[in-house]
Length: 502
Ligand SMILES: [Zn+2]
Ligand SMILES: [Zn+2]
Ligand SMILES: [Zn+2]
Ligand SMILES: [Zn+2]
Image (cartoon, rainbow, N blue to C red; front, top):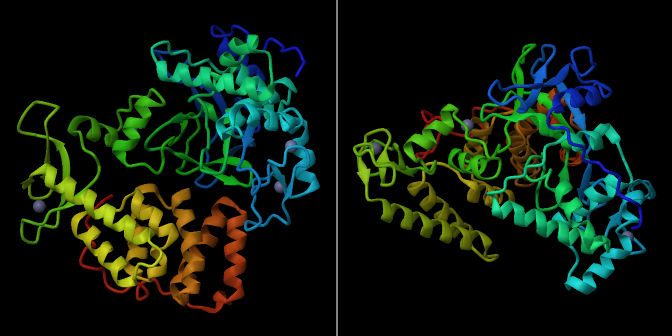
């Protein structure tokens, strides 16, 4: 690449807010703008701490703002580089790029859309593979695309101008972060076959993205949406992100009054302890909300065991600091209901073993239904709540076991823990519903289909997954099935405790 790099990085720290207000007003921000939101200083102590303030009232489910990613990269060969769809998700066909045979396209339209960016990297993929022995990772590909997009000056949504105004997260003490920015910049130079002398420029630019950016990472895609970075985090957020194809939209999840700050939860889907830890380490946020304070003050791991030794207690045993000592190093296992303490190590050890058995049983292709049920029973006897492991199995095989109480409990757990308007719950619905058709549980399936329709009405999301589920269920004429959510699930099982607030 021979284009000269314009000086995109002015020294703006002092009048950052003023510059941002001017730039973003062109895209509908500000008191008089059509979006009804503005970027403003939200901290008296730290005037350059910015956030998004509502300039009007928003009702639940109302869309606040939408943005396409500034740069994105997806799984090569099986997902379309332009729309990220696979054939299963509705792409008509999948044609490999003739130049690199690496990225694939579902249509001429998607290829044309991506070519201005892809033409700068296409041949270089092959060259990179020769040097590195493998194709570049998705993070390297994303970093390179950020650079390419900046050079070809794509200012969609004003994204480029907004990126320019982002503060470089120069944390001199954070060696790990410095190293990853440096490494990523070097990889991007290699991929673009660029001049190594530009390293400092690349570092400066890439340094703005990690982690002070909304990066939606999943195993398939990685992408950057700078417009959304101005929303601050709250563990009790009043807004939520939903995605339709490559359009990311922020919706009000609670009623928001004019003048209030609008927050997103950066770590929705984690346990309280995980979230508290990630917020500190990755986002450098020390959260003082109620949930985080419990974690900080008690050392709670937010992983609960079942109280078994006190008759009829069935309380949750948490591992936390010993309340009888002032030390914040020594943790004990304590029932939050009856205060009985347990030896910590055996609980953890037994728990690890049960999880291991569960993993092997569910991963082993020829495991019998009986052994799976047994492994699950063991899990519920020992643990009080669901965790990520059970979610993983749910998405793969748990639902095929056809144990309605497990499905119902997972539903309740996701509703309580993450909320009914969230993606974890929606994902649960669109996975559970068609599988329940297959296992001949039409009433339960119809109940979940109703929830999907309700969700869709609220957020107007006709995602490809939704269409797929809908078609599937229309095919079996589920609309005639009467739903009856009381009798469908049967009585609560012996492990289920309706008093617990997750
Ligand atoms: Zn496509
Ligand atoms: Zn190519
Ligand atoms: Zn918090
Ligand atoms: Zn107890």
